[in-house]
Amino acid sequence: MKKIHFRLVLATLSLALLFTIPTTRAAAQDTLDTVLKPPAGSDVAIVVFEDLECPDCAHTAPALAQAAKTHKIPILRHDFPLKKHPWAHEAAVMARYFDTTSKDLGNEFREYIYGKQPDINAENLRSYAEKYAAAHKMSFPHIYDPDGTLAAQVDADIDLGKALNLKHTPTVYVVSSRNPKKPYIELEEPTDEDLYATVDAMTKN
Figure 1 (tube, one colour):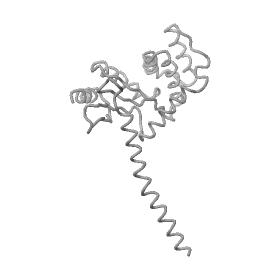
Figure 2 (figure 1 turned 45 degrees about the horizontal axis):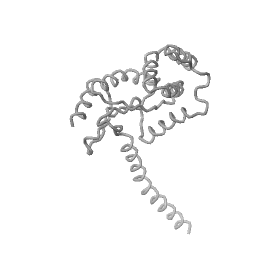
Figure 3 (figure 1 turned 135 degrees about the vertical axis):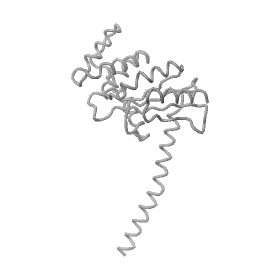
Figure 4 (figure 1 turned 45 degrees about the vertical axis):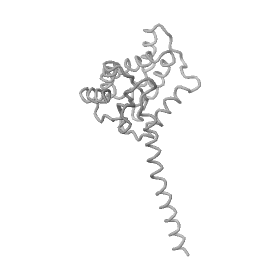
């Protein structure tokens, strides 16, 4: 009886795995197909998952901005602060605060943080946000996310990145609605040359 029971358990587990793995893969693919597409009104866009404390993100950001400007396409930013970076999550929440005034202000803050990145730490991060706010003639409140809405938005992006099985930052995609068979391309190493060539190819297709 014990042998029969053991075999029954093994068979049940095997069936569970058989049906769970394809479902998980299908869910991941559905997430990719939903996220990796241009916004309404655009045929091509750049999608980036970034970490404001990541040196590689700081290095890549200007190239992404220039490529978007040159080809007149949008950049869709997603926060993916890594656990190993102590102030990245809070910086992302701060960026979301400036987003509430305007997306341009929020994106400029991200570029500002990238530029100051080597000098920033968890203790002085707030002072940089205050300086940025003052330079734009606005105040930076002591409590800038009172109900946790902005942190929840950052966490939602993190969950999205995990659903896509992201392993590093930046993770950069060029996405297009012009070619249904190949709607997105991930740039493993988004060098200027590869970025421009990919955006150019996706724009012409």
